[in-house]
Image (cartoon, rainbow, N blue to C red; front, side, top):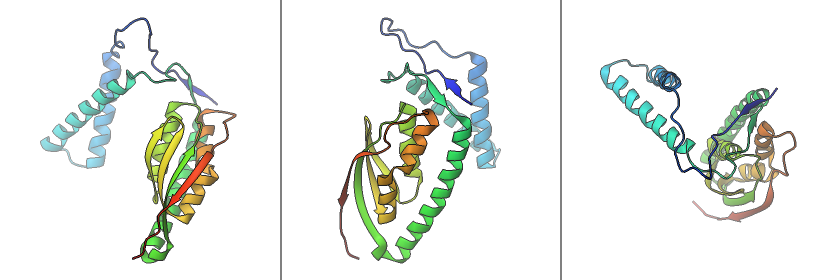
Length: 199
């Protein structure tokens, strides 16, 4: 089951900006965002509603700016597989739990800490896949995406376990399979830089 999301088409011969989205869609998006804001805040006084409206307007403006950015693969159809996405989100939540336990172990046993900087290449099928991978790494306790340039990632890792998981490429492979049936090799040219320290 595939859902094809077509990215904004950017004309190379016309310098005009993208046409504005229909007002009905804009109001619908804004209403959904404001509803989510209010549900999470749990407060409906003038201050929180006003803050929510300001936040929604800022997010929609930012989305508009990002949507009109000229990306290298902006013309490439984005094929997202919903069933795999649901399975991936469940797997990611489980990894977050396991990683939280590992970070807790490092806190109570500092000798388990083995920080490292890791660089690796991970050819992802679309720019959205790159963003999903970078955010997934950061959401997992013990790892932090520091930089993404092309298909090269720079990540900080807290422990040996988190370093090994990145080098093995399980997450990279799962993200690529959200958007492609035949993804490339998940991890290439992995390099680990370690920094020993004592407490």
